[in-house]
Length: 356
Ligand SMILES: Cc1ncc(COP(=O)(O)O)c(C=O)c1O
Image 1: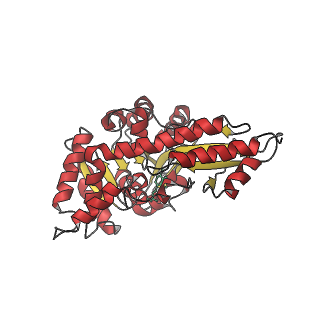
Image 2: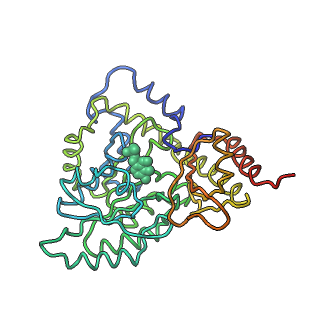
Image 3: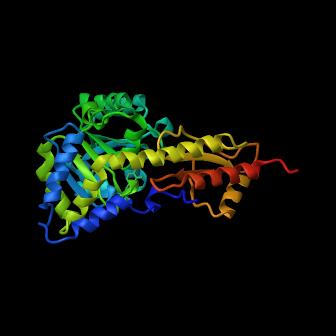
């Protein structure tokens, strides 16, 4: 019963097999490998973006920070959600890699930036003087950090506001596959057609060993990205092993099949826990993450049975008159077993069953 993070799952067999195949013989280094040329073609075809530039790095922090650094000068600020990974969990990487850009965190329910709050922030930014940081870019996360999914229309609404002010748009797609799997839309609809300029296309959480793609829909930024990636130490010499992972990931829609599996397990957990007395689901469960407020008895029973998950502070889920509660995050991955979800739900239900 391992629900701590999709990062705690292993790599999918298809990915491992591709890496082993890539080990044969010799290949050009530093991204000049033949597999990378195929990856670029595949990503361009998938996104219906024949001009897009595609680069691989090993972490999504690097993908986000290097992508945003290409969009923002050091004196700019990036509008993002208050709970976004770039704001809360990347140790200031955007500022570091951009040479000083700051973040402007915005509120919004269920992990989504409130369009009204963005409008106010952009309005205020429009009158920035030489004494202030300047509006730089908008960053959206999809799947959001609350496990919800922005629709193409929602992305277009927020991105449209930024673009109307001349600002570019970045998307943290650490769990982009889970969002596309949930929506059933074309990747293009959720990105450049909705106004996204740069996408961090996640793969590690969804079955790869360690690789993320950065997709620059405007290739004019490609040289700058190449230089920033090298300078950041993210241009891999034996790059073929990164290419092999992404090639296998996109083969036969593996990326979507893995994400659908993870999403289905989260839906199963949500249905089971929502039916458990006292459990409150905190955000709509739309992809592979579930946030809930649990009665302490449920939390204790799950912990005692060895279930792994994080408690997750949720300002909206404070202790109430009906007793002590614990806010938690449960994440399902491509490898989560239905039986483990079933068992966790049964333990939760058992903890709330009336004593005989
Ligand atoms: C939404 C989101 N973006 C970015 C990252 C960063 O990924 P990495 O740990 O590979 O740098 C994470 C990691 O958990 C994440 O959840």
